[in-house]
Amino acid sequence: MSKYSRDVFYKHQNITFLILILLEVIKTIFLLGGKYSLNLEDIFLIFLNIIYSILYAIYYIYMKELMKYKYISPYKSNFMIGLINLPIIIIIYIIISFTLLGDNNNNNYYYDSILNYLKILEILMQLILFY
Image (tube, rainbow, N blue to C red; front, side, top):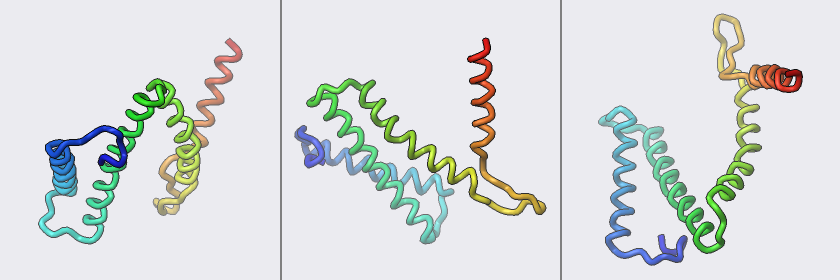
């Protein structure tokens, strides 16, 4: 972990990192239902959860470095992260909105529709502009 941060990590802190990763794996196994036999999909989920935990920790270390050494406020760093994530989330939401999930009694079934939110947004804009 020391190559991601300028801070010095002692042995007991490294042991704590390993214990937290181990607890994350145990939590994932229990969330999978405590199955006695894990199939390939379950092992893949455990692996993804470990990677997610490590990347989340690196993200927090990076944010701490930005605030400590570059003197960027937490508000500005969150704003930058939000600006980066907003277009990505909108693109993913559009893809999910138009992805057909299945056939429900000969009707097309979609997870959610972005068009409903656009209609609500249009109504709110009309209320704001005309009152």
